[in-house]
Image (cartoon, rainbow, N blue to C red; front, side):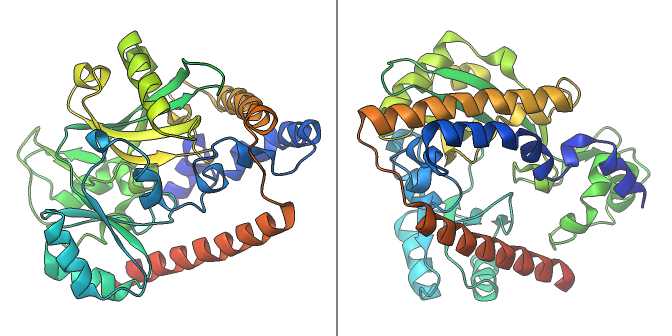
Length: 353
């Protein structure tokens, strides 16, 4: 009950609809101006439906230069597991690995897996299409939101979201389980943390020793999003400008990257673990310490304006054809059913543990 009240009075935990329903009139206004309810699908012509969630994450990763691409393979839904294990060896991917649904949302069924035996069990339990990716050992992770108008050489970084992974600090007395329950943020994710059978809840951490509880940089896994816009500089902007020209048909969205230092990030020394399209958000809006709810809504509206302008330019000047409304609606209904299925699978996994 305490956790429910905590979530109620801390807007970063509110449902996504709370960020979109208040801005719905603006979306309808742009739709009327564009004379299309699906105008936004013209924003990123290189990504299926501009990246509204129905795209293959694996295919979008193939769009980026190999320098930035972590080793990855695709395990298809009905693929023989032995074939997948062989492909992992051929790709020289070693354990631990990261596994995530090829079409997925909010960290559902994303997991770090340490052994081949554990991977085999996971694939047997969840018969869906997965990306299997090397586990990157870079120290930090962030999300960089960027857009560029198709007729311009340079774009704009609107957000750098630093990710602080869920962790607790030892006091030399309490068990790990007790530390989690004493930590307000960690306690909110206790049920999810229990899915990790490798965690020893009875260990006692030495005083001031930090224990990272999750390696998945997603808000739904407990990661805290921090406003890192003070790190935006010319070098990072130039790197993203060059990269945007190399990723054909991507003009608007967020890159989730792993890096070791801001200096290396600025110089383009990082790995892209995911490329997101129009469904992406500037993650820094969830830093409730620096941005309030109403400012977050305003930031979303500002981004939607740029999305509209890019989509319209692509349609008028680049000959980008929009998907028909009825087929698009049918596809979104199928996507909704798929996402409900993912959530049920995830919930089933929690009940097992």
